[in-house]
Image (cartoon, rainbow, N blue to C red; front, side, top):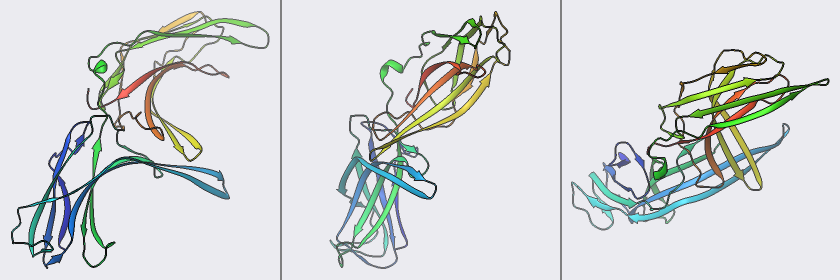
Length: 302
């Protein structure tokens, strides 16, 4: 066999609920090929792996979850030579296929590290007659993204969030530290800007603080067997750069953070989900930071 490949009709190779995935299996032969049938399979699967144990006794917990799995027999078209039921003669052949994706939302594609993924594939099998297990195989990975709910279609500024804390030492109790902020919306595409409409810190303590900071954070929750693990990645960091002196305040308004090239939000499967938030915070020496977390949805359907 000179060539055996899968081609999709959509050059973007990105699909959503209710879409039709169509394409063809391209086969080039220099010699006759005896076969039983040519099947095409759409397969989506989530896989997780969690490492545990000690440095000298490393162990792994695994989990696999099928999301979609369907098989059809391909239709032959464009053959250069005549064929019968069990033989393809030398030439070029295209076998067309089409799958209808379900109306319900499926988990978005995710490619993580260490074998953690949500992956969708078109697979093709040419069954050979001499052995039931003897097959020629080919596969093509495509992307699936959850469709954003209609309520997120139009950008609406978030509510103003507020929080406060009291700083204590061994001999006295300071005044409160207050933080409030607002962003322009909660759903974005990669490459778009998250705009901090306003943020302000009021410092009634006796300490000078470093200023207002912001981080764009990805959180990946994984489960495998009876174990769970959380990965947190900070993709972007920014700071107002202006110290907040005792009994003073600092504002940081109309600042933008660009969403990096990250996987879409994924909340449709329990063993692996991907979430994002923008954290606006003030660092407090020798204490937990005072922070606000704005949930962020990443989607290509905005």
